[in-house]
Image (cartoon, rainbow, N blue to C red; front, side, top):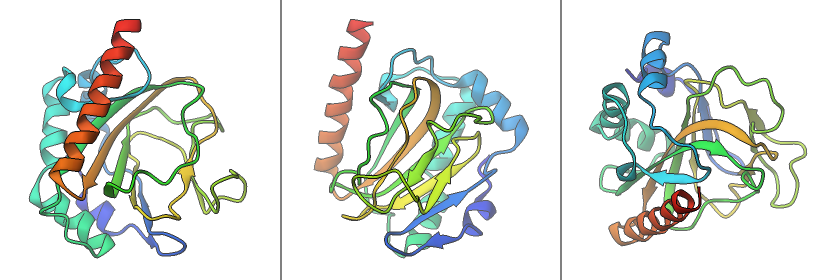
Length: 203
């Protein structure tokens, strides 16, 4: 399902932080099945995978994300061994107007990936921007529309600023975060689980 060659061929930006963008990592037939099998999410926020129900195509994609081949490849691109790093998977279905603020990801993360599963993105808002500072969306190193089959990976650092202009509406994304330790993964899991349950209760 995942085109590993497309990821392998993606350029890794080296300065001021490492990131890569790989387009078309999924074919049209697989995308159609993934749209049909995507978890039913009506609230904003990131939901831990185990909190969600989804179809067989989506389950197969998650299996490939957890495969040795995929994990080795992402680690190789960033010259770090991810095979023993715990992986935390979460899913977003909607963006709220307060999402997308400039951030670097938490220090508990080693590498973060996002795979987008949206139709062709026409809006300026909602496009991921790789940024030069913590206070401005201007002059980004890259601006990535969250189109279906686009994968973005970031090697977390104190300078790995990214975010997007405020957007409210459907914005589908699978997020993969390799953590420094299992303990930090469990903290992340509990934080997202509590947040998702509060959002569901308030919906």
